[in-house]
Amino acid sequence: MITLYIKERLPWIIIFIIIILFMNLLFYLDNGFSGISVGYFNLIVIGLFVCFLIWRYFKEENQINNFLGNISENNNYHELKLDNLSPYQIFYLEKIIQLLKQRDSLINKINVKTQEDSEDVLAWVHEMKTPLTALKLMIEQIDDYKMRQKLEKEWARINYLLDQQLHNTRLATIEKDNMYETVILKSIVHKEIKEFQSWCMEKGIGFQIEGLDCEVVTDSKWLSFIVRQILSNAIKYSYEHTEVEIFTERDVNDHILLHIKDKGIGIPKEDLPRIFQKSFTGTVGRESFQSTGMGLYLAENAAEKLGIKILVRSIEKEGTIVTLQFPNKNEYHEIVGR
Image (cartoon, rainbow, N blue to C red; front, side):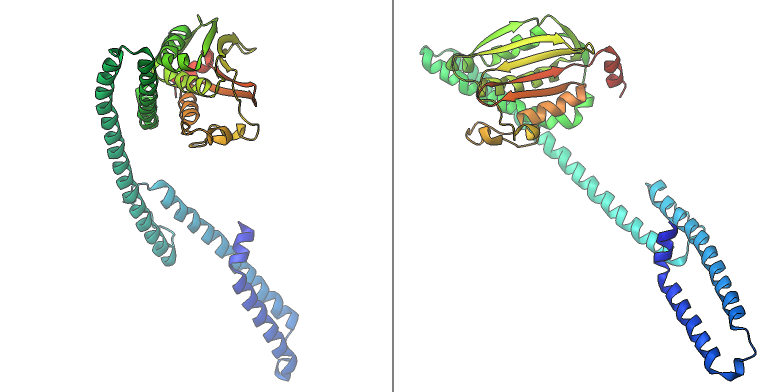
């Protein structure tokens, strides 16, 4: 603060030095000042100037604290404490408050527009669910097995993308939608595998499931969404006629770990740090028109809200294992209390 103050008052100090030098030169050239002690004069003037600087420092520090306090404390900007402020600081403060009010007004307009857009998207998604349900019933009545299987696969993809958009819109208000309960992992995993049944049959992908009788306390709807995104990637990037392994274990800190392991093309090492970034499709995703770069981004954001950690290990051309680390009892109470 002192260094900043000295830099701010550097013009004062320079002009004072110039005046002192000029006065000393005058004493040297004018014989009329020969009886006056130049050193004594310099000492008095420098002392007075230093006292003046110290006084101004404390006065202006107090003004700055009051000035900053007005900005940080008065969020409504209706009552301003103008005590101990200089006229220029009052002028600056009023201009800043005016800009802050304009900013708040703009933010409110943006929030209202965003809320309206979110509601429109939600309404559109729900409207799309009705024809999708009707389409599902129509597909089930097709006698040609191969044609029905292809249509079911495409229907599943459309439903998956709509569901992804629905949860993307709701993600900002996930705390309001949470309902924690005891969930058996087997029920969640089996339900999500069934949703991808036609896709798995087309690629010849099977599942090896083990030890999913574990119970976790979480939000079942959002956990289903997270598992859905991970299973979708596992199926999409698995080689044909391979198995996806799903199993659980406990780590040293008593966390339940749900592993989903595929035998697929894997994730390049250079892409791993960025897989949770929004719209990042990676080296592999660029080769597939199906990739949106949203699945892991949404899953990771939803998992963070639930206190679940997503860990990814991958070896290129050998496969990927995605792990969901659930909070233990102590961590769960902290999450619910947030």
